[in-house]
Length: 442
Ligand code: SAH
Ligand code: SF4
Ligand code: F3S
Image: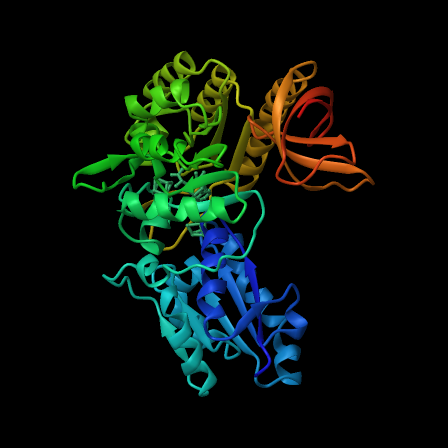
């Protein structure tokens, strides 16, 4: 028997990249690779990259430079770049960085075994096609090994919305939904392997409209109801949603579907209608707030999170103030905020840019407000009893950590608690990034 080759994958960017990295490791498993946690003993290094902001894309080149000595010591080492930077600038990477043997885009990684074989022959291998064949069909047979209690599952990919700042429609391609039966099968398989919580992924996950088993399209809500019937699956989440695709059946599911968790990530980007229009978001601040109102009517205790961009071209102080006002009104449990970053090829890159200093100052003010809200919502959990799905041991002896229904990190000190267990926990303290509690019922 030949010794297994070692694969080191480093993942950047969104949750979909995390999922893709798992699938890439599985695809290369068929070529005799097992995963390693260190680049030093790897026979192949794959960087699964993100192109969303300039900083994310730049990381790739500096990371690649660090592998030079590794490759000098081990000439057989193959280095590959996957993900959204590979899609956007694959050929340029090959030109700029001769260390790279292989480039593969997010829609063609099912062809990794062939690309790896080509690289082994000493040839450069590049595939950034948007093939018509479904990569998930090729990758259908997954290993049966046990795994941790939470998993991601891609149900929809790509985006047709073309927000003026965003590279995703170019790097991931057009919106495609996977057939519902395949998703249900994959979920069942994950549950058999020990998974109790599944997060459904899509760049526009709530625009999901996959083929149902007897023809016709299934909505995301319909899919969630089908997953709700899987014994052993305890929790369902989904991300990321667009405000315009929060359909009534999905909102209703938040009130009625027992396994659907009370947490929703609903990015708005800005609170100014002028900026929203220039962003090509096709919603207003008001229409976003109406959606939130409906969701809260269906599920009053839902925890909301959002994404914000500050310093988008033409953003005035008054536009920025409108964003702060919207945040005040919504009260977010979490939020992710970014300085606008010009991305080549997107419409907003051509426009008059806001000063870097102004962006930094606005980001600080926005983050201060968000931190206050986050803190307030987190502190209000003290005294309440929540369900926690435990995932792994914490930093201190006897400590276990997991997530509440609302996605707050919760730790308890109780050595009888096992990973993958769901228990009722009374929250007794609120720390910087997590809540502390004690088990009240198993
Ligand atoms: N599909 C999701 C998420 C897209 S990327 C959605 O539609 O919401 C995640 C977040 O990155 C976005 O919500 C946005 O806030 C941010 N982002 C995207 N492009 C950006 C850019 N050019 N500069 C700064 N932030 C950006
Ligand atoms: Fe990007 Fe907008 Fe599509 Fe989200 S909806 S992926 S922000 S283009
Ligand atoms: Fe980044 Fe691509 Fe995800 S650009 S955020 S890895 S879809």
